[in-house]
Image 1 (cartoon, helix red, strand yellow):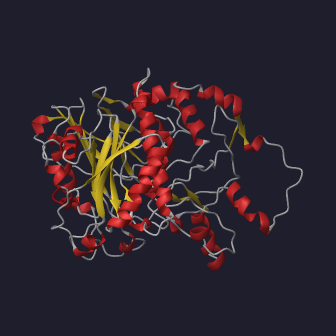
Image 2 (cartoon, helix red, strand yellow):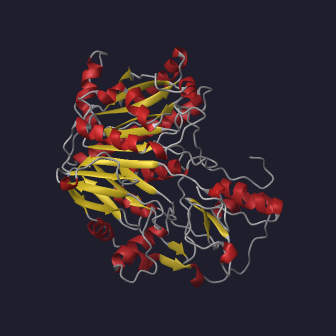
Image 3 (tube, one colour):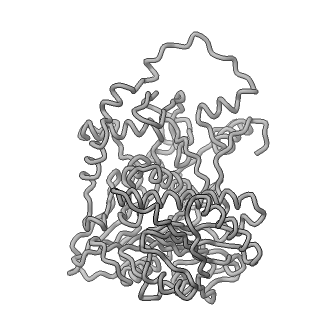
Amino acid sequence: MPTMSGLYDSRHEHDACGVGFVVHTKGYRSHAVIEKGLRVLVNLLHRGACGCEANTGDGAGILLQMPDRFLRKVTASLGIALPPADQYGAGLVFLPRQAAERDQIRRLVDQIVAEEGLTVLGWRPVPTDDRSLGASARAAKPAMEQLFIGCRESAIGGDDPAGDRLWFERKLYVIRKRVEHAVDGLPLAEHFYIASLSSKTLIYKGMLTADQIQPTFPDLLDRDVESALALVHQRFSTNREGGSDTATFDNVLEFLVMAGRPLPHAILMMIPEPWAGNESMSPQLKAFYEYHASLMEPWDGPASIAFTDGTVIGAVLDRNGLRPSRYYVTKDDLVIMASEVGVLDIPPEDILLKERLHPGRIFLVDTAQGRIVSDVEIKRELAAAQPYPRWLAEHLVNIEDLPRAESLPAPSHETVLRRQQVFGYTQEDLRILLGPMAADGEEPLGSMGTARSRSSIRSSTTMISHGSAGSRLRSRSPPERAESVGPPTILASDRSRFRSSLTPTKTVPVSSDRWKISKQRPARLLPPDTPS
């Protein structure tokens, strides 16, 4: 690493997580895809971190399509009768080691699942081999079980199979959230975590290094574990205050999808390409971005985001392209995408295409259609899905066009919380930005990636405002409001967008945090004199 020189300080160097996926574009399921995904993960080992012991990792995991044939085989001996594929959900659950505490959580799950009109089919202890784990990982390791939930036959049917599957996924989502909130009130909450619960995907993860995933989970060696895609992650903890920014992103993305938006739609809402001054962009696509910019701020990263719903899988960069990723397309219909090249040894004669992710473009493989869907096609269809130009023309109101208020209410300490909420302040704003300013009389600095030059060599400075992806350099403008139903009346300005009103509580990312999960809760705004 270079020594300190001029404006460079090696103490400010940070590493990045490793992410990648392997997918068969035609949707052909095989164990070979799992093996290749695990090889990608191992080759990203250097992007992860470990604790004081080299064999206690910062976290690693793999997501795959539901291995129906394998699960039927291993659950039959447990007396669990699985219904047809897509009519049951399964997930990895971290539980307390004490049997009595596990039973308490199981009873709670049974109750909530029944209240939601579904059925608990059973629990399967997940076989694990701890011999490669460090002492810290073994000491913190929870009991790990797979939960199986069945969908009643009366709920399946109708003219829209895709709608039925989304209905079931929503039910599983609600069950997971309800169980998490219910367990939060119990003293054993820190020993509980639902890593995944879905009818389409299954996750194996833990407080592991990349090369420990396969030895720790013997399931992954079984030839009946088949999938057309494998999404992997090797975690490097960035030690964000208040919880992982990746976890927050995943929460919001999941919420948008569960609300009915296609996955690419939700991705482009959160990570739009630069559009305001883009003269080459079509008016329809620009209207799509402008409309959604009034609903939530863009996620600036820096990040390379890989995503999947079990059918489509893809990746997108932050708008500045500060987390580069590359992908190969092979002649035998495989796509390999990762944070770097060389994660799989592919003979040159077998490679059809070598490419990289581009800022502002979305890369997507649809295994149901059996093809790579182009960025242009995705955006054209999304822009044409609703009359966004007409909605903006009829309902957009610029703040500059509003009449001046005749009078303003006098500020009072009793209304400070309400005014903070109206103007979109968060706990992080108060703790990281306003607190240091009031205490030290200094402007706090933060970065989640910015293309601006350093203030020491810039002729002008800019105020800091906290955005949805971290601290960003810009000026704070007056607040705005937006309704969420129908073509709303939108208050907008060129310099500021309304913050997302979503307050997700926890996430199920492919990336593994710790065995013991510190749950994220919605931001709670406090008056200045209230201890947090």
